[in-house]
Length: 221
Image (cartoon, rainbow, N blue to C red; front, side):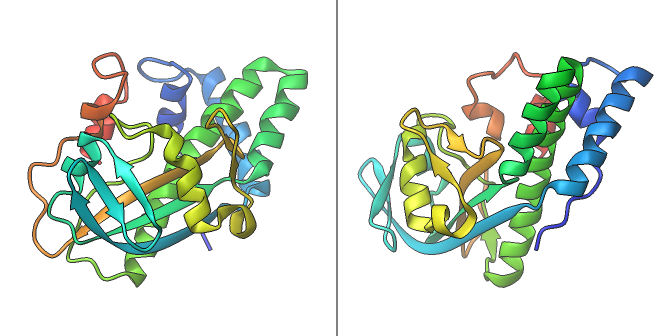
């Protein structure tokens, strides 16, 4: 079971677009939202492991019967013999908290949305630790999600089907490739028997490269 920890105020503030140190009013909004989130949100996740085969321009997930397409994921998983795919969600409680706040105070709604964005990243970090406490991995890549680089976001549906995510954690995807609940993530992590060297950072694959205040933080992960 994943347990939430208090969110980083500075991280949530950056999601809100705050540059530099957040002022007292912003800190109060974040702390209030974080307290409410901590009381009602119960994160969920599911994962599976597959052997992979790189053929031509695709990465075949042999256990699931679908391919990861694009040069970026092929490069990312180069040298890996297996991969983990996972899905993690804050569940519909996060969406409910955001919608409830929108009725009364848009500033509180913004704070809640951004706190939940920070929390889902925290959850993904915890999910990785839990997965690799159970799965043997001499070396591994960082997590790579549909929508990064040229890996199609339309693969969300394949991920969720392979994970049976609707039944197991209540996670679905719309025809527009939007996951429901909204504060959810799918990702793939490569597993290798030898060191994975010279991996580009997440920022190398991001459409906001060069414009995002999180670039240093993402590169460090």
